[in-house]
Length: 129
Image 1 (cartoon, rainbow, N blue to C red):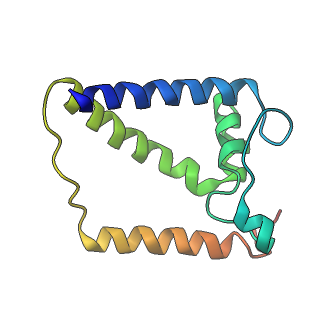
Image 2 (image 1 turned 90 degrees about the vertical axis):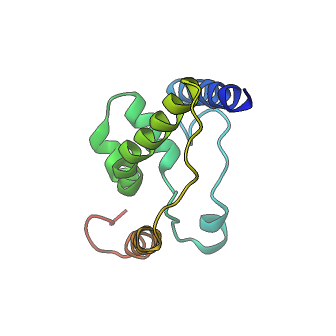
């Protein structure tokens, strides 16, 4: 039973967060935390621009969202699929399988995020800010 209530609570929080992001623009109004990595180093992290990208997605501006954080925009379908699959299994009363992602996939994800982190701090296209 706690899995169902957890899934419902997460979907409710996602809906509330989406409504908040739809109304308030990050950096101009509302409460949005600052990136501590950027504050202390001056460089951008892999997550920098995610809130602004989500705001742009909610308003239908996918190209602008892609310029703010391309990795996040490309990862959204995978994250949405994984959470929808998990939610459907739990809400139908099933027990989800334990996470068993093979090591090569984990290393590949690590390499992709690390590469994105490095290249987005270079002065080369498309990472010129």
